[in-house]
Length: 121
Image (tube, rainbow, N blue to C red; front, side, top):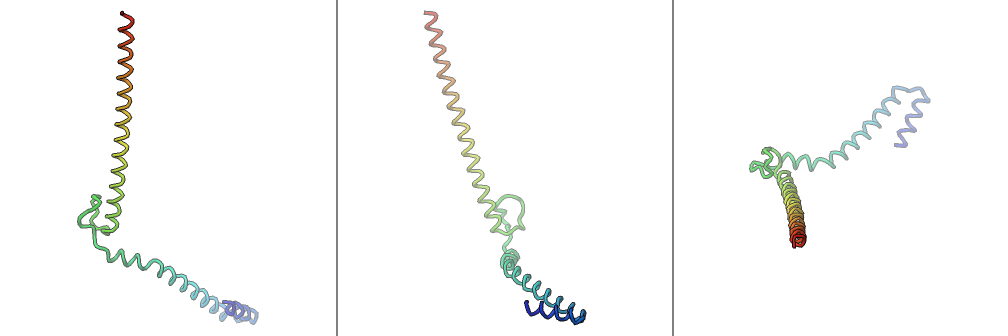
């Protein structure tokens, strides 16, 4: 790269602007090519994996999309199961709280009844 810059500076100073322009184009194209190759190597495996993935013909995640990859659907179904478990846990907690509140209310009613009996006696 440093040689390209020196070469470019010499060409500009010698007023060989056409050659200087070609030097810059070549240098930029080389850098762009390297960057694109690196990105392709980074993302190509996942792209090809998605292209070769089996479709979710069983609709594992019950979302109606049978064209998505089966791995993705399985992951979504698993996430859905976890959400269902969390919802069930929340409902159970709410029921326990209601039960506790009902027990407390019943105890208060019993205490009030006893107080009324004591008052009348």
